[in-house]
Amino acid sequence: MPLKFKDDAICLSGAAGTGLKSKILGEYFPFWWRITSGGERKDYQLPTAIIDLHAATGRVHIEDTGETVLGSAGHALHLKLDTPKANRLRIFLREEDPECFSLLRKFITDEWPNVHVASTESAVFGNSTQVFVSNEALEKTLDIVDKVESFQGLGRTIFLFDPLRSVPWASIEEVARRRIDSFYRKGTEFIIFLFTSDLFLGRDEFAALPTTPNESSWNERQRKSVMEADSLFGGTSWRASLLKEESVVERENRLVKMYKDALHKWFRYVLALPFAPKKEQVYQLFFCSNFEAGIRVTRNFYSGFTLNPRYSPDNRAAYERFKRQHHDKVRGYIGQRKPLEFKMLWKIIREHEDGFCDLDAEDLKEEEVDFSKRATALNWLLHQGYLIPVSFHNDRWLNTRSTYELDWSVVTSRLGVRPPLPLIPMSLSSTMAGETRTG
Image 1 (tube, one colour):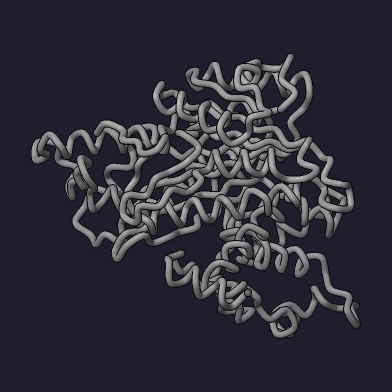
Image 2 (cartoon, rainbow, N blue to C red; image 1 turned 90 degrees about the horizontal axis):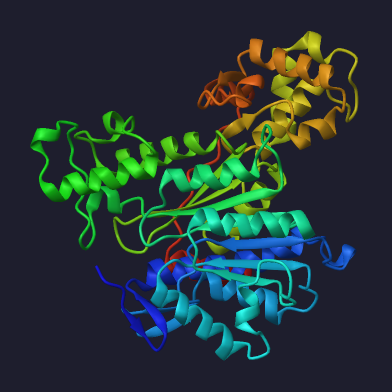
């Protein structure tokens, strides 16, 4: 389907889809920047970067309502160019479509006349704005990013993947391979947008995926949809799990789990934030990080928009049950003192998305700096059944580390702690309710 434009903005339908996504990113970017730049305590001077790999025109015209709003690139530019003390923030905007790219350049010129757009296409030198725009292929754009990184350093960096439908897994791998060169290296975060329900319901020219892996029964439109999903997952192994006669909700939930598992190759924590543009329609923003504090504040940020309560299990009650289960482990601990095994277990329960953990997690290091003591405590939790070993892909450096997930059935039966409730998808009604509650 050809792209449409109105008043120099790309046209997209769906106020609750595009509008909500734009709203959450417009609020999240400054929220993230205030934390990662060091905040007021460090005068916002730690280097940071936002890299939008599908920048479009900077503005979006929502056909359903007739309104024009800032897109993700527009919000990033507004943060950089209209916010005091954002001088150490760098913005990279990539858009391959020639017409979109031309309108993006025009948007920058119209909104910020002091920004010389020609200089924004200079990789390092002669670019005083620290805004970089590119209409190159992904690899060449990443070369520009690498050059700026080597000369100036980028600090904490967000990569935003927000194509019109889905991003090829090969693109995810290319960026991750360049940025994360050791086991769960911190400093790089991904935000990936995925039209989850469209795969099973279809939309516009995209046909719903078939409900059988038998290729001979597919029509041509279904075949094209399967090929696009092959690109999304980077292969065909997904087909047996998703091409079957099950409800849309069951297949959506399985898709989200499979996609999160794939992203665990590169990221310790993957948080899927759902939003519902329309009835029976659910999309996802996947937030990926190797720093648990970043994921925790992101989940809390999302809860502030919606009716989702923050996860607050009862530490005192859980510890009382832990003491009854493990007399030998708590012997000698009085008052507020607790054994390392419980403190690490509680961190994993309370702070780690999906109960995912490994020995290098920063908050576990805060509980115990000694690697061997952490290893002994984690091994005890494993043998007690609180943890189960998990492995995602046979990557060469990931195989050098052991990774685990909570066995929530054991945690619930022994400690009385249930896992967090599934997130209620963000919708127009839940957003308004959240704003009313927090206003």
